[in-house]
Image (cartoon, rainbow, N blue to C red; front, side, top):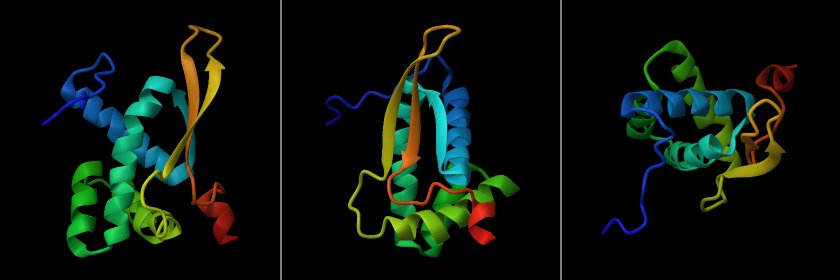
Length: 132
C-alpha cells in the first residue's frame, strides 16, 4: 500500500521534475554539496540516496540502472563513475541516510527557505583538489 508516499510536485510537470532531479543529483555528485531551496533538497534526498544504494551494489546492472536514471550524456557518465568509485565506497558501512540537509534561512529576494544538501560520508573537497 502507498500510505503517505506522495511525490513532491514542485509546481512542475513530470518531465520537468525528472530533469530537475537528474540535474540536481549530478551537481550533488560532482560538487559534493549544493545550495538550493528546502523543497528541492527534500525532493532530491530520496533520489540521491537510491543512487548511492545502486553504487554500493557495484555491478553492471546497477551501473546501467544509474546511467538510465541520470541520463546517457557525458556528464551523467562521469557522475556515475564518481558515484561508484568515490561516494558509494565512502558510505559502505552506512545503511541509509547518506545525505544531510542543513537549513540556511530565507533567501533575501523572495524569502524562499534555503538549504544545503551534502553527502554525510564523502569528502566535501572538489575532485580537482583531491587529485592534486
